[in-house]
Image (cartoon, rainbow, N blue to C red; front, side, top):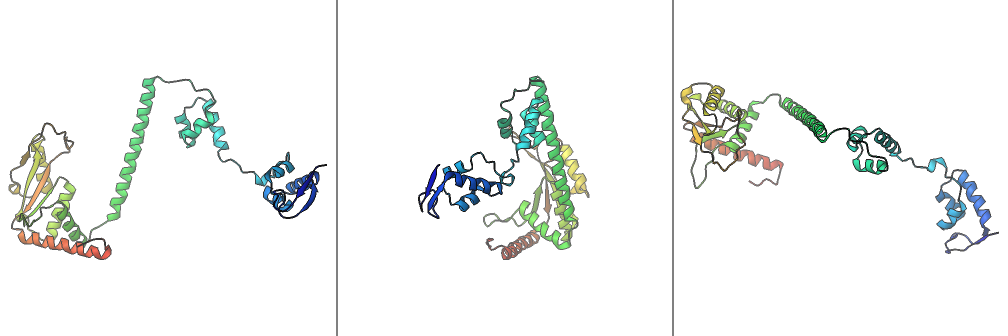
Length: 301
């Protein structure tokens, strides 16, 4: 008969002293285990705080069901192995199950590799089609986001258009400098949308169309005639208000990306006798900056 001497602090008891047989403690431990107690509960109940002795007391006795933690990946692992045996590649299994290829590799690396069913060219073609499909989905998502954002604007109030135009000019218009006085209202943009908003803003300010002058700036290697026709049709009105096009020389060493049918150069919009208008624009912009500073103290005026 084995006896266990339990003394305070000796690692076998710690809460009470005395002598107990191993067999007696084992009977108690198994009975408590079958009642559904955890190892911690049994340890505290019997005051046996030595893990080696506790393991011996419970040896061969299975834990209650409630203490078993199911592995959430067991089903995925079994499914991955089944798909691998069906001849699927890591990529195909990943698409099917949505788990990482590193996990798949751990689960199925002992299984034979599937036979290559496609030539290198065929596999490349499949990958290309998959990438094209990915790009299509991205384009569709991009269009959807833009359409939803555009719908959020609805209409512009008179004041919203006014403030928008001031910011638009200060981003794309000419500016006066202490070292180079340019109190002239000149706006330049290659974006027809921006030009359209700017012209609507000028109309809101009651700037007469007779005071507007236009000319195109474009690289000499582009389709100059087509660009001129596009901007004249876009602006409308009297063609006589269009001045001679400015051609920009192309440097052979520079690789330009703004080419093709969509490239129409920039449109320059000049307002005649506009020194007073420019001064007001600069004042409006300073007012916007000052108003914004009340909302964000980080803005320094």
